[in-house]
Image 1: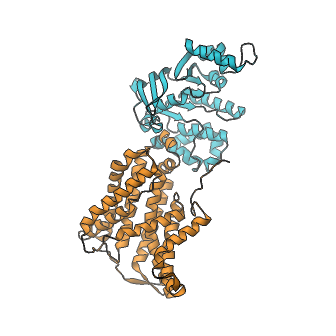
Image 2: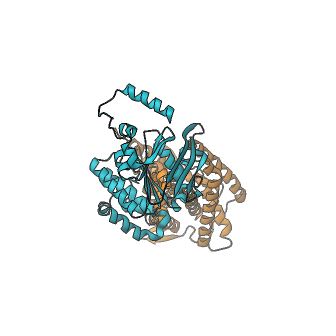
Image 3: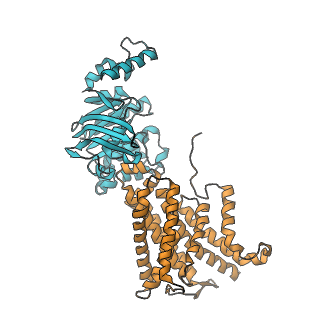
Length: 261
Length: 295
């Protein structure tokens, strides 16, 4: 459904952030994208959703194809209308507006089906329904994340780009968000999930990519990634022998690894 | 007592004009974070357009047509001169609007010439008896028009899809973009609204008086109004405008008797004194949002 080909992104004309990233998101699947801070995960999402411009970024090479059609040069409004929605990192709800107003905004491009989509979102998130008249800024972190996801669903997206939905949430909340993602996917929305919480992401994803300083360094089915030694060590926090390593070794190892990949 | 109530009526009438202008400033500020100094020019353009239209059609129709035309003008001006500067420092854009103001005013002045022009309003200087106090009809007209427009604006921002999108874009542009809100259209609409409001204000200033090249100076009174109301609050703009009008009018009526040592025409500076007093106590204005910072 979504295919990213050889994508190269430059910020402020000088900072090369993505260098030749290729990635496939097949229809109906959950695909996980892992990577450390600054690897370029968010940049990749922005390139897909058209939000690079706001940050003075630009696609210099390659393309993003949605069902074969290039979308990386479209403005964000058009991308949303084509059915691709990004849920930005850090929730970014409109804190001054009420919960329901936030949801109505989510339906900006799809005002015709407002009522039924409200019902669907309230069905998925009963908590949000209870709070619908409240000012959104006063919701708890988990509720705000649900609101952010619910808001995105209001335009009935075909493809949902989730940027670190588990960020800053309690483990219980993370489980709840995970189940919601699975449910949304089951109802027919394809999901590209960017996560630092690799355990959670790989548990529900069919396929996983690992991004490191602007390049895809691993591209395997999620089950294989879960078993992979490097992934276990760097993303799941499980050393091969279960012991902590000195930071110096880690650095050395990573430098060597980058060489090879 | 009659004198007092007449002064209040004049104050509220003029104040509602300041409120209309202030609303324009605030709407543009909220959506683009720029204070547009082109408002005086749009106000003058609106007034002058009505002096020409009123000869052809009924005054009220002329008022509506002029507001629409100036809104369109503001829309075009925004698209051509301000939009390419998105992302540039706010200061730069503010200076551009200053230049725009001068350019538009010079062009409009060409249509005024050396004499004064009439807007052709139906009330002129006639008075009406309101609970025993003779009040000029034009002040009532100003107050009523402003009340109507404020109510319309309130409904627009509260209940319509695009009004909601404008509020969201004012709060967080990037997130609004991610919702599919066309933020460029939000900028354009805010300029058009401000232009239309300024045009109506200009016509109201000209009613019962006349339109000449110095009409735009009235618009400067909107500055103390927005600052004391809080730059980012629509309600504050209305309250600030009315407060400035009232203070100016009351000081004009009573200062010569009560405090002659302040000299003549102290009423002209009184809005600024009021603004300073408010800022001393509330640095973000009466209804402004203080910057929320975590400590």
